[in-house]
Length: 143
Image (cartoon, rainbow, N blue to C red):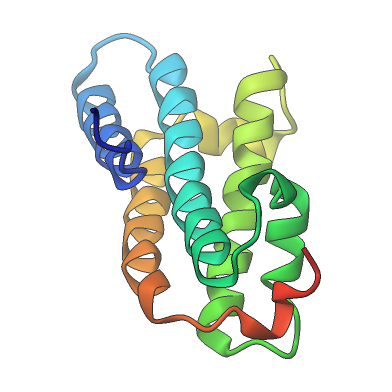
């Protein structure tokens, strides 16, 4: 029987991709866009699993938009809301990386800069380490 995939590995992959993208002598935008997606999914899957496991909620009920939105609920601690804000930003970045060939200038700059996505990934990694200690109880009923 195989073991469950650990979503923190997506964060490791995003860091590795950004590191390689920094060393490229040709445009690295496809690499950076891919790293942005892995950073988002790493943090999202960690949060989704924590909420589902602790509150006996089907993971299917924890969709992207609802998780990002509910994690910013004012009844939650500052630390949980910080995870929610970062997750929402990564979600917006990932959507543009995957679906927009020519995003708005702000997003285009981010999606072509491996250093920017590396910084976002490292923050996602830091926040992911806080998830085991966070209390999601005040929003569990919303799912």
